[in-house]
Image (cartoon, rainbow, N blue to C red; front, top):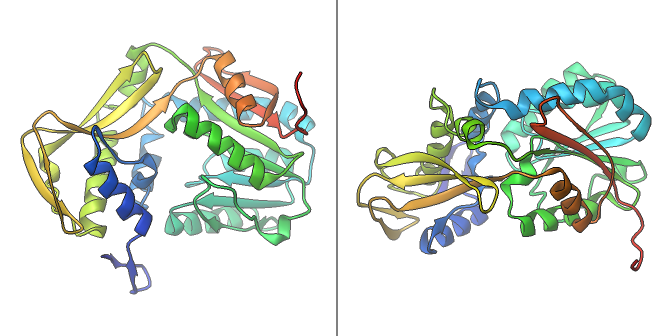
Length: 325
């Protein structure tokens, strides 16, 4: 299957993993498609719009924490580290960190290549003396980072509570992959959203302006565009719900009526009220966050939060493993 023409006028093959994940997700029960496929160019742009919404507190809260902790962070990390940002997106929080710690290089990693290259150009212009090495890749598995930073001490950066999009098992695997990519002795600066009332959480994922709904429904547009889909997007609606038992916000695409369509030549039928589960956003208590980091091979060394305790930022180290106790 073919994507529409790229910016340079060339046509590109659809990602085979995207095709495999969508087909497998539509066939399983309950239906579910991994959230990482939200982030084509349009999805990345919509997510950046979400971060500016009044209901969406995580971005502005985390930025406030990063601004406040700069002196502490600079003392704990030192200078000259290569900053490796996992899932960099538009890198809106990155300048705060780069100004704070004076790194030797910056390696943004993202699965959305076009968006990655655009944001890297903007950052290079803002930091003309900094070596910027954009790296298009899926960071869910260990990566061989650019040779230019092979010998540099490294600081992984994973803001935005993106870790919450994964189940605890997947989150642990990701943290271990990050450790393998960065190496022993590396540090990791990571944001995690905290547990709070559904009256705050649900509006953050179902805003009054409908931007999050558009972000969710864009996944169906991407399926239609890249996988020759015939999904009638107007027959699906965005649903956000708090699952208290699993401490997570869930996003779904719910069929408003019985709906049939094809994707990559395969037929599917979704009954009215049935959903396609598209995203989780797990929330962590303070102790939960530390346990998760340790399970992933990282030793917490510092943590910060905002005055209202909405969000947490953690610094951890990949210390040498040792046998118990």
